[in-house]
Structures are given as structure tokens and as C-alpha cells.
Amino acid sequence: MTNTHQLTSDFDLARAASLGDRGAFEELYHRHHRRVYSLCLRMTSNPSEAEDLTQDVFIQLFRRIGSYRGEAAFSTWLHRLTVNQVLMRLRKKDIKFETTTTDGELPINAELQSGSPIIPPFIDAIALERAITQLPPGYRTVFVLHDIEGYEHEEIANLLNITVGTSKSQLHKARIKLRSLLLKKV
Amino acid sequence: MNCLDCQDLLSEYIDGDLKPNKRLMVSDHLKSCQNCSLVHQDLKHIVGLGQQLPLLAPENALWKKIEKEISEISTLENSKSKSSWAKFWQHRWQFSISAPQLTGALATVAILLFLASSFSYAPQNSALSSSMQNTIVARPANAYVANPTEMELTGTIERLSHNIKESYQEWDPEIQSLYDRNLLLVNQTIEDCNQLSKRSPEDPVVHELMITAYQEKIRLLEQFLSYNK
Image 1 (cartoon, chains in turn cyan, brown):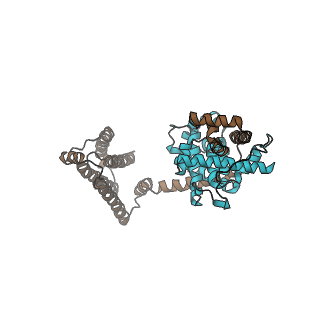
Image 2 (cartoon, each protein chain N blue to C red):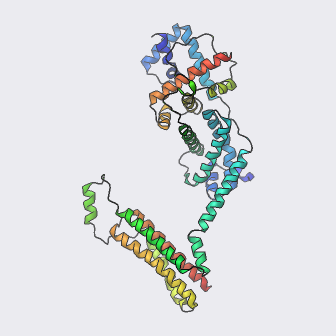
Image 3 (tube, each protein chain N blue to C red):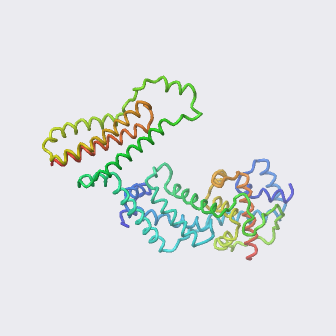
């Protein structure tokens, strides 16, 4: 990787990479690999699988970079590529996004939540990270896409082929489940 | 509003997705119910934490793995491109092409043209309106209009062909024979495209094929012209 690439925009790097500039591609990797890996890890809860997926994403990127036209921000384009790659992997595992009874988890039915004890302020991101890994895959996917990655319910519904109502319901159940997991740690 | 109904709507309340009347009902309930208010605070806390999660990094060795794989892909793609037309012409220059190879190449071109022809003549889908079909039937058979790229290419071919004529007699008979055979092949391709274009004058695939055929002819003429030098 050459230092000259460090001040170059993603668009210019992508164009250079599509013309065979390996240094430009490496710079794109260094700029974006943490975001790609984080997304893969949070959606799969498996570090080894997340690394495999990250590798797949960048190989796909290498193959497709010539088709990037700059119509969307490069990071958005890459992010969508990543989400598609992860969802494809999850579908191969036959994970259903409509129901969440996998891993022996029963769906959370409407039940009254107790307000006491409240999650204390010292419960931090690390605890939440651990709790996310314990979510059933369907809940986890919607929670990661909405609350961490900032997707709208309409986008999630399109990606997962579910209704907007299901996406909202899954998200609410994911949050409730996370609350109970975090309260157990107190 | 009871507690169960309120808690069911808490996520939408936090995300601002509720209609004003329901929002007001939840808001009023939260003011009067400590239990639901604490659940509301917890969920808000979780949403806030989710937005602050740090980025995580994979093992450092991951880039090396990716680098290795893309090197392999590049090598494979380079070898593929060498084995296509470029390699074909390179072999031709070495006079190493045999009769079976030439026959094979001709057969390949014929198959490609046949496939292109089948594609062009595939029945129009049912969505095509009858008025459009009538328009196509009513169009004169030779209404193909060359686009600017094609006109530019034919101009180039004319110029190069003229230059070739001037030096053709000076070539070795073997070179002349090689040129004649290649020219025949390329001209046949162009003629086939012409036939296609008469039947489907506005088919963009036919224009694509025509341009490719012209470019092949230009490449051939340029290569033989460079032989002079």
C-alpha cells in the first residue's frame, strides 16, 4: 500500500482498484474492514464465520468493483453488499426471519414486563454485545440492522422478505429479550 | 390503556413510529405507571447502547488471506483473457494454426451467430402490444441504420483496407494466404451480421455484434499493416 492512497476518496480508490491498482484495493480494505467484520460478527455471533464472511465480501468486492459507478456512497454500497452476503449465508442455514423458535427459543408472547429492578447505568456496550449473541437469529438480525446499523423497517422488510409489521414486532421482542438477558447479569 | 397494551407499543413509542393519538395515550400511561416507566427507560437505554457499539476488528492475518485469493483470481483471469481472441491472433501470427483449429474457430463463430440469430428471432413476449407488432411487420426489410460508432468503424476499415491493397503484392505468399483466410472469416461474420440486421434493424444485440465484427476486422487489418513495418 502506498501513502499516496491515504488521502484519496473512496470513489477514486474504487476506480483505481477496478483498473488493477492492488494498493488502492488494500487501502479500501483497511478503511472498511472493521465495519464489514463488525456487521458480520453481530449478525452471526460467530467470530470464525464472521471472518469467512468478511473474506467473501472483499472477494465479491474485488470482482464487482468495476461496476461501482459512484451513484451511492461507497460505504453504503459495500454495506449493502455485506448485508446481502450475510443474509445469503443465514438463508443457507435455513434461518427463518418470520419465526424465531430456532435454538430452542420460544417466541416471546405478550407478557407484562416487570419494571423492577431496572437495568443499572453501568451495564455497558460489552454486556450488550454478549447479550446480542444470545438472541435467537431472527431477533438478532432485525435488532442489528435497525438499532446498530440504522436501517428503516421498510428496508429490513424488503431485505428479509417479511412485512414491516413483522420487522417492528421482531425488533420489540428483541429489545425485551435483551432487557431480560441484561437483568440476569445484574 | 393498560400496562400490557402500553408495553407492546413501547418500541414504536421510542422510535417515534406511533400516530399522535396513540403516542399521547402511551405518554399519559407512562406518567402514571412507574412499572411501565422503568421498562421504558430500560428499552431506551438498550437502544442508546446499540447506537454506541464500537467497531470490531478481525485477525490481522485476514488481509493476507484475501490478498492471496485475489492474486489467484487475477492470475486465472489473465490466463483466460490470453486464451481468447488475443491468443488466437497471436497464434495466427506464428503460422501455427492448423486446418482443424481454423475449422473449429469458424464453427464457433457460426454457432455464436446462430445463437444470436435465435435470440433475435425469439417470439416477442405477450406483453408486446399488437400495434407494436404491426409496426415491426410494416417496417421495410432493409431499414437498418448504422449508428455513429458503426459509421466511424466502417470509415476506419475503408482507410485501412486501402492501405493494405497498396502493400499486399509485396507480401510473402504465405502471409497473403493467411490474410485472405482471416479476411474471409471476418467478412463472413460481418455478412452474417448484415443479414441479421435486415431482419431486426433495431435490435441492440445486432448492433453490438456488428460493432464487435467491425472491431475484429480493424484489428486484423492493423496487424497485417504492422507486418509491413
